[in-house]
Image (cartoon, rainbow, N blue to C red):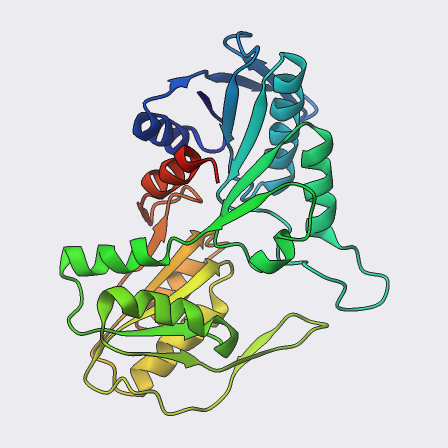
Length: 294
């Protein structure tokens, strides 16, 4: 087996390779004056090999996606027996159906492009709607990093008997999953999203957090607005300490400032998306899944 750490996930790719005790092949990347990417593998010895390409497609998602397409297609040209795309953050997964007439079904398009570039399997982490990914021709394994995040809080002693909260009722399984580790009970912060504007509002609700430590879990923190509101609500309900935890810390603009300013002790994310809050690594669970060859 060969692991290729893509330009967007070099550290995570090397960690995965280390866990698998696999050979790595590095990728040279440069950009032409017009911004286009140039990709070159440091080796062409892929004939008959099972290859895993580790490449997040977090922002700049268009650039990272094109790099992934180029790598997969080139590996196919070099005779790889199989290609697994390890895509910790799967760009365009939030547009997982046509909500309004005339909309593009974006995630379907991205998966079709990966398939046409020679990808045989996809491993991702906490996709927006994993059920949708099961409907495509390529097998997709969606992993969860929520237990890893919860274990971090427990191991570091940051919380005591903490309540696990999800952002929205639909994500209550996330809070339940975290509670299997933290065991302080779980609930959700009620949200309502406008389908046209995308704006999220919070509905009034009494949360069972008075005098308690709280960890609010979400799959993605993008602009930080919803998480900031959730943290503020937990504080207003009497929470002692509140932490924000997410799998994909995009943290666009002043997201971090918003969340900390609303009363969060800290933000903890995973290395699905490289950032200064990406403390928890998904390498071990990714390598374990790849070994099983589901």
